[in-house]
Image (spheres, rainbow, N blue to C red):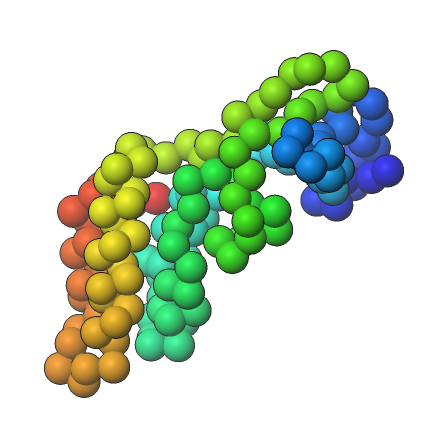
Length: 141
């Protein structure tokens, strides 16, 4: 089997599976580590770079996850851990982020509030997003 991201060969040493349901994942350990390290920043940049109502609405469709997801998008089911190889090695799949989980929960609530006010023509949602990301130090990601 090949990794669906980098196309490297997946063998019994780097095969990832969900320990909850034994589903084999379509990506290798190296790509998993890349997603853990980079996906949070990618999600935040997607929100911060939105330049119109449509792109921001799309970026805010789902909250920013704490863990990698089944499809590497915010819309996928979150995966807390994966089993690696034929042994019992478990890898935690929590995204690396500069804020803790409680702050992320608060950020997601505030993003949802902004999303709910976007139809108000007097509400400057792009400015509010910029201020919110700066408040949490996420504007430079």
